Amino acid sequence: MRTLSLIVPIVLISLAVPLSAQLSRAALVRQSDIIFAGTVTRAGVVRVDQVFEKPSAVSLMKGDSVTVLPARAGSPGSPPLNPGMQATFYTTGWIYGRWITVREVGHEAIGPQLATVAGTGTAQQDLVAKARQQVNDADLKARIQAAAMVVVGRVEQLRPMEYGPRPTGAPARPRRFTEHDPNWQEAIIHVDEGLKGATAGERVVVRFPGSRDVAFVGTPRFAAGQEGTFLLQKDTATGSPLALMAGQPVQAYTALHRLDVLSKQDAQHVRTLMRGP
Image (tube, rainbow, N blue to C red; front, side, top):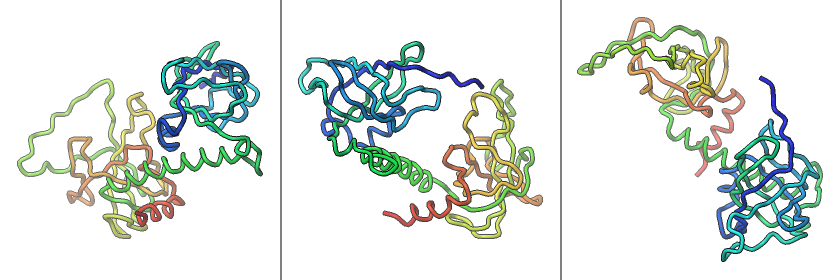
């Protein structure tokens, strides 16, 4: 797929409210996908001093000019961005074309000491990176807590989904075909280490959509021989909670969130989060 390079200047819809009056830095980072430090050069115009985060398709670099259009200019608690002011802008993309328009989640005024290069980055860059790590860890910890099973293991086999027996009293499962049919597949995972809800040596059936339909973009898929750390939920997606293993009914699982399939090396970080407060 061809990557579109987008050219600044950028138009910002600005809340023009200091960080302390809005959200924590982590909350700002969570809602943002374009984060940069800049210096106000004149009313409504910011020169980019450093880009901290942005989508790969967005062209934004040091020295680019950013036009800031305050959304609530002149309102109480909405001070202007005065020339010479340095700030970190937390924003989200809105309109892309000849001009890029982004919405500002908030901005954080910074002093000259935070804009001074220190080693390979800046102090402000480190603060943003730390906040992003806090957000990522919080999201991963929530997935770990919600998981029925967390394992380190290897995919031994792939196969089309095999329906297990219907639980006693459960209604018959109608087979529905739609334009977004998931084409469910099963990965048989050998558990090398059970971190939650499993023990080493077990084999687990994990279902995933084999379809390449747009409805399943970003959904993890499995490959034979794949090693990793897997956060598994009991299957409530396919309508058939039981699978077959050596002819016997067993609980089926899914791993449908992007954080549910991690590398084998991520197991140590998962252990740390599981031990934490």
